[in-house]
Length: 596
Image (cartoon, rainbow, N blue to C red; front, side, top):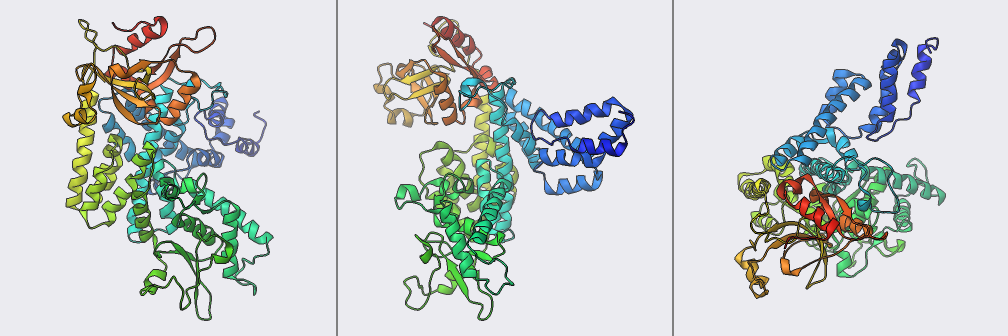
């Protein structure tokens, strides 16, 4: 090996495939080479050898911090080592968040402030292999070793990725307020609230634009502005037809379909919700047009959003595209005299607009959206909250949004307090601080509670982690907590007619996750233990984003090859809150014994 010239060794090391995973087999090869001999060390330390590995692993960064690192180190290996150092800090903080309830949100705040510099390592952690019952497809058995607390760790890593992206989106919204960012970038930032980075949306649009260019070329549409046959109307019609051929088009007329919340988020309308609403179709149209060199902009037209394209001289006239039109013949809108589309202030309605008006329009659409999906409601409503806090002069709309949404303590402790609050005027700052501080304080008080079973009186029959069927309503759920008697408000007790139950309000009540993703409070007499197949556990986990916060595995007592009694294994969170329930659950699974 010592006879191989240095430049040959450098070329060999440059051929090591760069991978993005948590095992870093590529980097281990380089590190081992550095330990083998002086010559190998010299070759493996060359900056250019590390560039591909850096770019594969680190796809996100705080822009200013990355520029500083580039200037300070000017070496890809040293840059890699510095990012690995930051990864280590982030993973230690993640460990603390997973393992300890008390002080969790303080650690989360520190981690979130590291922002995009640690997004990549957290994103990798959010894809750790999980126990078989929690895999979405139980026919695909992961051979990879499951790390301790993997399911719960994935949950918190994913949650931290989301709050980091929400903070980034809010920065985009701030710039959109002054129209300092493009319409495309602003709309792409909406999906940050569902944990999808704008770069992912941009890559999807880039690929669509490549396909669109190929399609236009195939049909003979000229894209070179210097060509005498260059025609913007033809290009606009070509983009419209390409979108139709790729299933982008008007959603069904039914109110329920039109008002689906995911119609407003690009990660959805670029994939599963391509039949969508005008503003989303115009986002796709404008993004494709601009990537093809056409200066297209949105138009805030009443009832439907249009796209504007200026025609070249003479006359410098404009064309308007309705991406929601039923066919290509109607996609270019005619605003000649006598047109039914005319309004008294047409010049205002036909002027190209920046991203701020479109962001406001999206926020209002989200507020009017209909959904029964718990996660969509909780996450989606954060967009109009942020937009209204930035844009709206009237505090009533903000109070209305706050009154109708459930704030997550993690969101409150991180991006809402760290990123949003410092940008607000005093009046609305007080509204937000009041809600956020109350939410975080409740979470901290809850974290300090330890629910021990009384030795002298085992009044609580069931345990955290037990699957059940509701006696009266028949839905499947799982217990995540309990009280020795009903601790709900008087109003809730009256509304739910608790005192009409045979055992009334003095019996134990259980906090539960239902199979539809909602949380409920159930009387002991309405709980009936059941057995669960592994496939049901997988579906239950898929429907309940909060489930990994409370559980990290499953114990199934198989009998004659089929599933028998089952319980979900407590996460560190649940084990600290209910220290006696693990033994009670284990005893029930193995011997079918419950407290008397």
